Each structure stands twice: as structure tokens, then as C-alpha cells.
Image (cartoon, rainbow, N blue to C red; front, side, top):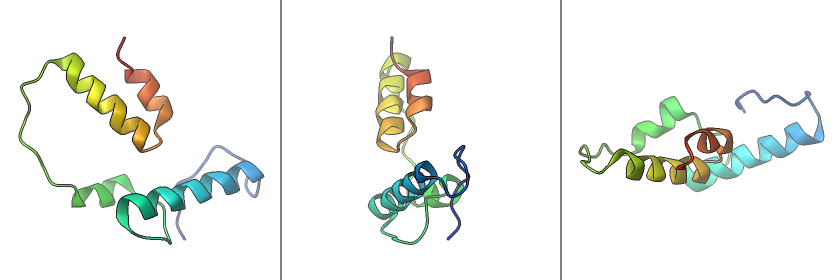
Length: 82
């Protein structure tokens, strides 16, 4: 299995938990049990949508929700609507 690198020590309980979470996310999002999602590849299966004309703050709220759903908590915190 090829998983994304983590900031945890190799073989640590935290790394094991992170790898398990990656597997779970991959299974939920992409129907696979054996590898973590790879954004560059796996997001290709998401259809493109037309550009929205909604206000920037509304778009950032949507993006915040999506980032949280994908487990990108630090990124979500960075764009969190104020």
C-alpha cells in the first residue's frame, strides 16, 4: 500500500492511526479498501461543475465544509469563514 507521508515517527501508534484513517477515507470516498486517496488522481472522478456566481464568503464556507469532510482540518482552519 502506498500512503501519503505523515509527520509521525515510523511505526508509532499515531502513524498507525493516520494510516487507518487514510484507508477509511479512501473506502468512503472512492470505494477502495486498500489505498489512501491521492487527490491528484482520485479527484479526477469528480465531475466538473459550472462556475458559480455566489459571493466569495459563501464559496469559502462551502470550501471549508469540504475540507473538513476530507479530514483536511488545518487547511479548513486556515480558510475558516470569520
